[in-house]
Length: 165
Ligand code: HEC
Image (tube, rainbow, N blue to C red; front, side, top):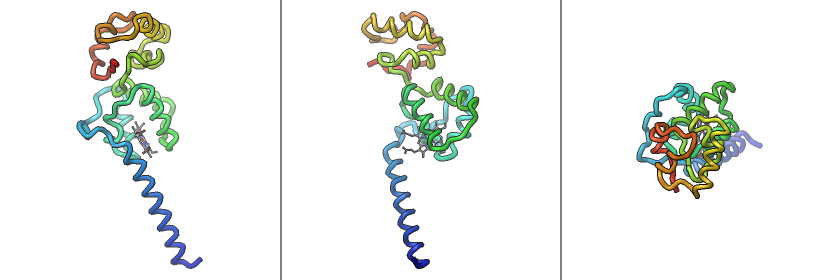
């Protein structure tokens, strides 16, 4: 192969790589309304701002309406993409994201998701899910407040991130 054709092949490969990268990005545009908004205050914010701003901007992270489960999968995906942090930092990052950004579909969420978002233990979270099932689901925030083990003030604080459908 001549030098020119090596350069040509490299150029084509680079172009193809760039194109597929752009296509991958095209399907993940965050909702424009709040784009550029700062991350909410909370413990661990600085750690998230530092790590999650290295491969893409924070605009890419926030805001996006992901449930607790989807956020955990997204965090695993970032690790697979090569995001590096210590186990302790990953815990801080996960707690920050779940506590401050994640949405919860109260009628579909697992006990595990309730546990993480409300910071309650496994038994209490299972009690919430069992109660939900006996009630045929939560139709209003007030229904949710009747669930044993859920703090009313925390429910109020989370209201914008609770999905009742
Ligand atoms: C090592 C590089 C890297 C780091 C560090 C990184 N990301 Fe990503 N992230 C990516 C790549 C690459 C994509 C594009 C994937 C795609 O388009 O599907 C992406 C996409 C995303 C998306 C959109 C994905 C989707 O499924 O729609 C979110 C949300 C996200 N990153 C959050 C984060 C958060 C939160 C952090 C910090 C914990 C982080 N990223 C750190 C590489 C990284």
